[in-house]
Image (cartoon, rainbow, N blue to C red):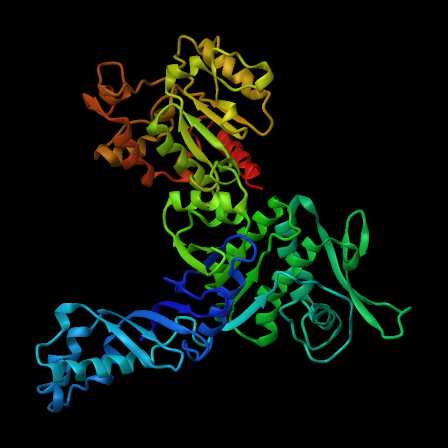
Length: 568
């Protein structure tokens, strides 16, 4: 049996309350103020990677689902009699398959306080005790979900220093050994040079992006030093080779992370999925944008390589990054001056409660990285799908941007302008978030297209947003968003054989529709619900189907680039 919940008590600051993990996810974010006990949670992880989940140092509280294989060992099918009476398996063991039990383990490794569903109890006391004895034995031999994984730890207090050449290659928790590993991979015939100068350097450039582009990684010996200390150098245009000792601590942190993720598995000849990485306070000396890119790289690595991460942090950027992830969890560690507690965060309001502890304002953490202003809910359904397709599913609402509605004529009472130039009679939506994109129906008809006439409020907002840095505005070339949906999609939704795609100026009124509209004249429907149709249409949309739909490809490509800039 493998436990799915494991907590400890009696370790260091965790004196009075159980602390640990309700579950293990691919990314486990341990967040809290300094000196609350985050690092001690890593001690629990180290134990879970060993052969035993119990230790004589602390009490343990565990829970797990009983599997059939384990139960058949405890309740053999071919055995009967004794205190269990009739067939041990069919009358007793089989009833517990896929049922959950809980138990505790004392410091002297005694299993006690077994809990399981009341309906599984039997009347006869001797029989009940015999059942519990076998279940306690299963609990005694329960295994950690991380058992046998290779534990890699990177301390908050870390550095990459000059080092003497030694044959033993080992990357320690404080970063020592890093220079020697890089030296051997670059200079030895035993290790492939490309692991450092191609794989690691490519990842380094992916994380740094516009903050730096490294063309070469080298190691050099300092001839002036009689002890022959080696040092890592990085080439960056136009600076040339620069020693790592003259670079910032943030660069060293990124290199140490990449050495753990990319080089250590190669050095130890192990699959990357075999590792549990515990990195402490990666935000130290990292600019928030660089931290976000590093965390994004870790997130991608975790999902691609099936590795497991435990990250301690007091950074709101980390909470923002993983708060909505379906393969991550957040564990909030607090200390009341006497004992520490750990709570798995499950709701938005729990996240809000962390803000004051981290010294952050709601705008620092819970505000979207950008706002996409739309006329209504059907537009949100389409735009989310367009962005998903043209970003190769790398951008998602709620993480990289947030949709909001301005509702047609409401735009007449709104503005997007710097505070010192705003009109006091209009609501300034720019104050909500400076990263903005706006999509607005052109509402043009064949009669007005020659003059490109726009409503006054639309023309005004277009002018305002054009002055906002890193903003985007799309006034549709077609009459509205429905005009961009190909006829093939309309045909599939309504099971028709359509003769044509919607034209640039076809009309799509909601609810009851009349003559002179695409819905009535081509689809032959007298009613039309925009949201209902959008929900059925978007799963059918592909990049190929949208290629020739007026200005859509150009505008969505620009919008994707804008959102990517907000999330740099």
